[in-house]
Length: 437
Image (cartoon, rainbow, N blue to C red; front, side, top):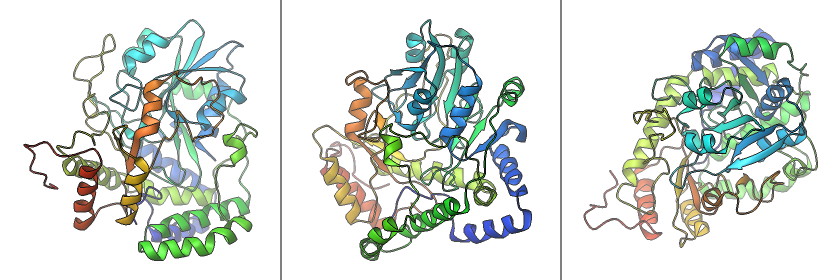
């Protein structure tokens, strides 16, 4: 089964990480920090590790000590854990719609939305597609702190060759199960500018080590997700049926509590990253060049496979320039490293039917994000229905195809995927050969 989780994890990484942790102990955290910093071309002192990406964001925003009435701008296509951070800090949020042909707001959209009360802008790189024009935005709005949501964007580079996570005042990464690098849960705050590092160090919170039981559940969940990518479809369905109830009753699965999604509870923002989890991140961070190259190639393969199908076009493919004032037309996003391959289906197409057909050929069709404030049913802190029509349209129609170490399609799957796309709103143009490239 080709899926979206543990995309950089090999079975032997689990054993190698355990051995490394037993040998290095707490120093395994420093080893991971150093390797992750190397993948971003920053100094190790620029990287701060946390138990989750949301904890990294929370720590940085709290360190700003913003006055009452301060406003944060968020993308109108995001995960609930992002606005929840601002809710828990008592800050107002306002959403900026994504572009109709992209998965992010453009720099000109942010520029138009910034008002007198705006103090923070969280700029996303959704699916790994980088938002261009941050330099011009920062120059025009020096009173605003720009934070990159780089949870999807490990490895992407802008038109000048700079790495995602180093383009704004700060950035946060997530190492959750479905992210480009996974430690179960975990995250990092990146401060490329030494001045911001010094400022943050004066307000950095004290973190506590997760309990052994928490780490154990994370590793069991990682192993389960990795197993789902190794078994034939029929065997996997049988195993899921057998283990679903016992695993839930025994509390063996680690996941975001429903009460956090609904806004009824607050996560532990003071949890750190366990050295054992850091050792697992190290095993993946060491291979960053190979992992990034593989994802680029897989995305290019999808581009070729779906060529000529007007209903199955990757958003952002035609939006490689930024029209914000002061941004040159050459500001392209040609070196993105995608987390998932997104497609916006025609409104007339049943996404559920497409997903069912994909499952039949052993491919998981994802629905990130299924709401403007993902997941569907979340609190949607500060969001009013209809505020971001492009984001709402994307939530209704988006389909994700898997990328990662275990997501390469077989020739039969490639042919079947092309046929599914042609049946569901993506019929080839008359001049197109219909080949699978």
